[in-house]
Amino acid sequence: MREKTVEATVRALQRAETSLPDWVLQRIEEAMARESNPVARHHLQFMLENVSIAKSKGLPLCQDTGLTIFHVQMGRDLSLDFSLFEAIAQGVRIATKEVPLRPNAVHPQTRKNSGDNTGPGMPDVILDYVDGKGLQLTAFPKGAGSENMSLVGMLNPADDPFDFILESVAKRAANACPPLFLGIGLGGSFDLAARLAKRALLNMPGSSEEELQLLERINRLGIGPMGLGGDTTALGIKIEKAFCHTASLPVAINFQCWANRSATEVIQ
Amino acid sequence: MTEHHLRSPLSDEDVKKLVAGDVVFLSGPIFTARDKAHALIRQAGSPVSLQGAALYHCGPIIQNERVLSAGPTTSGRMARYTEEILKLGVKAIIGKGGLPGEPFRNRAVYLAYPGGCGAAAAQQLSVLRVHLQELGMAESLWEFEARELGPMIVAVDAHGRDLYQEVRGSVQRQEPD
Image 1 (spheres, rainbow over the protein chains, first blue to last red):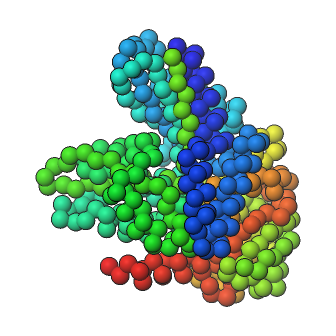
Image 2: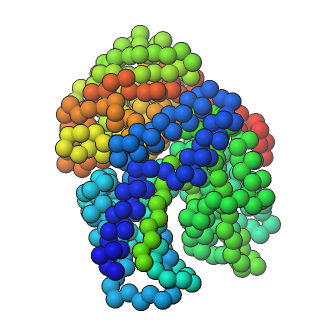
């Protein structure tokens, strides 16, 4: 099982870094058909071209191969006699050489690079126990351009969280490689809101009435691909909610770039 | 959207004819620099002449001297260095997300390469030399030969126009609160 986990990690990273999920490509193509701004269409077209070059040549589609984030769903029947973190970390080290990945993980103060994308706390493994058997592992490499624009707001319960989201996106979108995918965490505590926002990105797609309305308001901003104007500022929004304290309203926004990379492997 | 095919090093005339919204394809030598290379240039000067140069905000993936992926990084992190970089003679800064426009007036342009398009960019670049290699793959100052690097959008021109600022302005007009 350990060996299978290491191999699945390498395969998931290989696929996540060199291709995009079909539903992501479809959103870009749909946006392209609607887009009226010539500079924006130019960008969307080139993004699609880039994805097809990456896929056919097996190259990382973006040079920022990201921080290595994984979502693991573990069947309740499983009990592991090895460290899941260590097995995934080993897979990351192999993938760094084989894909290859750019070494991105550094000490937060000395800025010394480990050279293999691992270190204390990295990879980040988000673990869920689920009904069912086996182990499902999703690689979700996350680039810094979009992650750097993410934020948590501890709002006054009288504030409108959607106004806060709209203002934040208006200010920050251009640096996050739009058109964006936005993971929103609404409620919980300071850190729970942030984790909900990341989980929202992991759980995409799915669009409620509320999510679609917010998406429309964001696209009306006119920020456009790469912040150079256009009808396409965001391609998807997912909101995850938790109960919060009666005195609090935490809102987290996890920005994700248009290259919304992920790949899932199932281990039986 | 006028299309330009330019060759580096760039002249003042090259810069002058570029207008915000134009499309540029660039050939010739270009230099990458991001956070650490900028800090080092401030401290110790540039290891190469940047007269007429195109400076690319990029941390590429290189394997055996081959460029595998080399799209732009967020320029905003390097905004604090713009003035001194342009003083070294840089005529074009390439990146994504933009830089404040004022320092570019009458002397340089900012070119936006589509973010996230590292595999496409790699097809247009090859390695000539590497400087400041001790900073590691992503942070080294790479000297690339560009072949029709683009399409890049002139986002800040030398005549005072800044597309990002224009977009931000229209966003604010639309959301008055």
